[in-house]
Amino acid sequence: MNKKVDCVVIGAGMSGLAAGIRLAMYNKKVLVLEKHTISGGLNSYYARGKRKFDVGLHALTNFVSPADRGKPFNKLMKQLRIPYEEFKLSPQNYSLIQFPDKTLSFTNEIATLIEEVNKNYPSEVDGFIRLLEHIKAFDEVNLNNETIMAKTVVRNFIKDDSLIEMIFCPLLIYGSAWENDMDFSQFVIMFKSIFLEGFSRPEGGVRTIIDILLKKLSDAGGELQFRSEVTRIISHNGKVTGVEINHNEIIECDQILSSMGLPETYGVVSEFENLNHPAVGKLSFCESILMTDKKPRDLGIDATIIFYNNRPEYLYQKPQTLFDRESAVVCFPNNFKYENYQDDYPEGVLRVTNIANFDLWNDLKSSEDKTLYRDQKEVVFQNAVEILKKCGLKSDYQVLFKDIFSPTTIKRYTQHFEGTVYGSTDKSRNGKTPIQGLYICGTDQGFLGIVGSMLSGISMANLHVLQGDLK
Amino acid sequence: MLTNAEVRTKVLDIIADIALDDDVTGIKDDVALREQLDLDSMDFLDIVMELKKRHKIEVPQEDYPRLASMQSCVEYLAPKFNQ
Image (cartoon, each protein chain N blue to C red):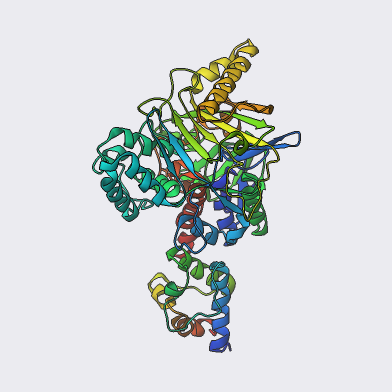
């Protein structure tokens, strides 16, 4: 006899766990299947010796106070029945968008950015304020929004291309599956989550969030199974009947919420004839993580995140080289306002993330000569040290430990085709697929960031499973 | 037979679990819940689902407006609790 459940959730990342919790809360027999041995997906963690590392999460976006009603973060916490304080959030100090000629700083108060625009682009500030009003009034999570490109919309408000490049830089690199531009709804999600709400960090990093979600899932009666790769989504006459895991075991179910990505999901559907072929996203990253004997504030930097770009325009696109040396996101996890909660890192932590080319890294990784891959990771690291210097970090520190990951590392841990981080450019905004009972949640449903991905899991579980039961 | 006060307590228990960062002790019965608490349409659906889960009470969609205030909740739900 095959095992039978009501719902299978594919992937124990943020969206899959959140979906699983909602379904289990309302008495669904739910099984979350995760290929990897730990949960978190794109936002996970690991340890080397006593040192702990976060992957994915630089900062949690969407920071608001508990009194800020109706904001995504508070909605999320309420839907999962998690008290606000449990994430132990410390807000950012401030962040910088550093371009060759100008630097804009922003905080969790939008007034800072307005003032910076006024100082650096006085003739644009009125347009910027009108853009803010337009963004605030826009219903970005409406599942019926049409796709329009954001730069086209923003040019109606701002004339100076260099300001547009600067505003888009953090929003693109923290969430866009598209090169150099993004869908306006996603732009608004990102704009609100970063500029109008802001950055914070949970004490203990991403594992704090994951641990809370895992406990919630298990308390609600949801089941989570690791080392369980979904190798086939089985349907009959266009309707889901179950999944096959690890090529041998069948689990019967009526509904599937898949967070593995749209192309990745369609790739395992058995009745594939009716399906289109979603595009595989082009954007992947490499990252250098440095643990140092001094904390960044003792080396002259108290910014939380620096969006570094050394060109007049910001090239958010798959580079022709292994990685783009001229732009990076630099994150300093020690530099949050640790007042109510602690900086749990005993050492300095510096993270430098560059846009990278999956194919070129994959060639290196598949090469007979294993030193090639290692040598290029060293090049990434050396470049990171240079970028840190250009961001103003003093050089009198010792690197106690370093780790560099590449797009092939991302593919290995997330199973995303070509190591994409923000998924496909084809989103399934309402979560529907041509297969009845198969729904998409997570990045390829189109809500972004950690808060967005959890809300995606929640919304899709509500819309397609729980609300269906009420009718 | 549940009294109106007991029905009120049962509804309040549900609301307290959903609006868990809100203080629900001072809810005014004749004022819309939405105006007093951080509740949106997603949360009202949760109230409906909790009624079903905890008390096997079904609220059809056309009756959702009856859950607007504590007073209307009790008026609408008391007969259902006592069926």
